[in-house]
Length: 215
Ligand code: SAH
Image 1 (cartoon, rainbow, N blue to C red):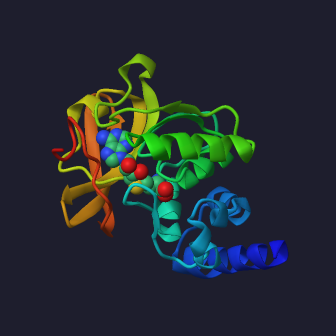
Image 2 (tube, rainbow, N blue to C red):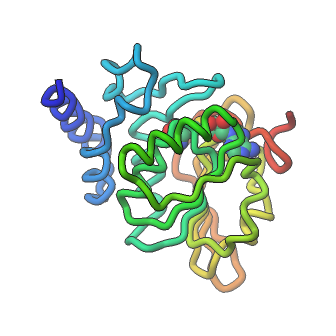
């Protein structure tokens, strides 16, 4: 079975990630070792390496592998960066960030998901991640500034509170736009300027919160 899973993972990396243009070897390497089947519902384990989002508890979803790879690559991580992730969900993207040697603060508003993903990541040996169960749309001022901020759910606008928590040279990546369709944007903060670039169209579940979508 273990053999099967790693063969499925290799195929996903070759076909759906490298094959669709992901070039960052560290991201590809990370995704060829993380057991995505342990982040999905038991009944979906056999579908874990198909390039699709899947349901997780609390009406949320684990993002599609290609999108996780694209966002991870867009963050341009070299190792050691302070990263704020908003929307822990299953914890799969968090594991990718951990494999990329980031220092991670991850925020999740759902009590169930926050608890489950913490337990799951600790069991898998990721033992230096900081878990915060609360609304992440306001960021985490007590730990700012961050070198990277990643939103893994959609936002109507990029909250200014988040941009103000970026360090010089810092990067924000996340889906911004309408409830039913967004653009994945990258914003780089340099010498008091925010440079914004659109990476692709996408569709994410919403971040519900003070600076996200209304409750
Ligand atoms: N990266 C995750 C994707 C999670 S989907 C994965 O691949 O599993 C987005 C997550 O954001 C959901 O788990 C949802 O519960 C959470 N969320 C929604 N609003 C939030 C908020 N205001 N603050 C923190 N997390 C939020």
